[in-house]
Image (cartoon, rainbow, N blue to C red; front, side, top):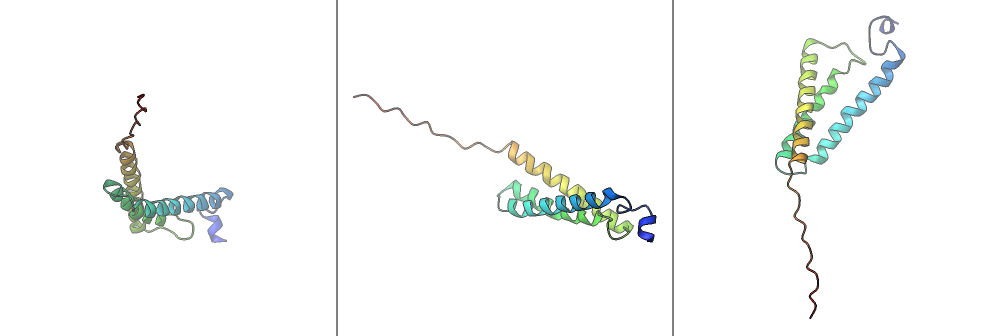
Length: 109
């Protein structure tokens, strides 16, 4: 009962929903980064930062009280996740477009 009396993310009805959606967000970003690691060049660095940023999941205070070290690691994970998403976005934005070849019209003889 002590868990529900203190200020905790599960103390109200919304905490459980926020907890599951946060968990889904971290897991989906981690899975996406594993797929994006197959890309080459700078995208691989962004995907790696996104994967390493998965330590931000430690910041979920659903089941335990966070220590100062866990908070610092979680914030570093959030920063790495943000860096990874920005880097992947820049790769997509400035990626060279494939050249399209225009077929020649048949010549009349």
